[in-house]
Amino acid sequence: MSPSPARGAGGDVALELRGITKSFGAVTAISGFDLRVAAGEIVALVGDNGAGKSTLMKIISGVHQPTTGEILLSGDPVSLRDASDARAQGVEVVYQDLALVDQQPVYMNLFLGRELTRGPLRTLDRREMARQTQRLVDDLDVRIPSARALLSDLSGGQRQAIAIARATHWASNLVLMDEPTAALGVAETAKVEELILRLKQRGAAVVIVSHNMEQVFRIADRVTVLRRGTQVGTRAVADTSHNELVAMITGLAA
Ligand SMILES: Nc1ncnc2c1ncn2[C@@H]1O[C@H](COP(=O)(O)OP(=O)(O)O)[C@@H](O)[C@H]1O
Ligand SMILES: [Mg+2]
Image (cartoon, rainbow, N blue to C red):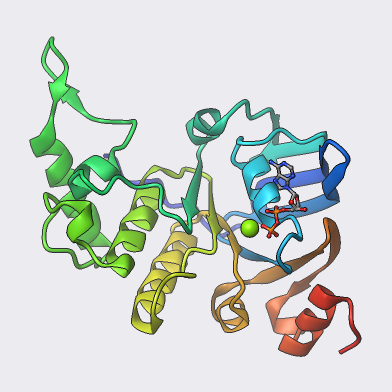
């Protein structure tokens, strides 16, 4: 597990979306969506239920293919065939409903699908995975009983921290988060937000879906608003207000 290279927040464009449209039969879930996210930048994606936020995240993570439009990673147009293809290109996702395996130790969750093996029989190198996991959680100041603990023995906050630690470790470019703190309490949310800010410091680009306006103002640099599949606008967090965002989300005057 080599440390991800630190990148300067020099404004390199990590992700660019150009004219993304997605239809499911007669339903247009997204139309004409454009966004650029710089390395080291956190962009919040907000909107009411059904606005198209999860669909957009699934397009960027290779789960859905756009009907029209272009995705560029670090300036290069890419076609993401599926989720593992996106992962191979440095895109990691943290879901609200954690994509973790309860009955496996923490270290196996960290290496899910990328297990370390040794010897000609390629037996799992559990000791090395546990060692690297311990180093990562120590490095991120994530407190868990042990890298060998079963995931089911962890609290919701600890599990979400593991999901983010995994993304932190493997993402070379971009981390997508769909409501990562929706199921967490206040203290756990604070810890997860600290991890998100560390990702930013390491030069990752982050796109986060959040319903929590205070959270958007605490951690995001910019926020983009979707309403019924249409991009209403994008603002620097420093240049907008809670009221303006609510007005953009609902379509009602502030
Ligand atoms: N796989 C799918 N098939 C058909 N319609 C879908 C599918 N996924 C999402 N939709 C529709 O696309 C719209 C946006 O959904 P979604 O992206 O889940 O919104 P959000 O995450 O903002 O709540 C909704 O009308 C939803 O019903
Ligand atoms: Mg959603």
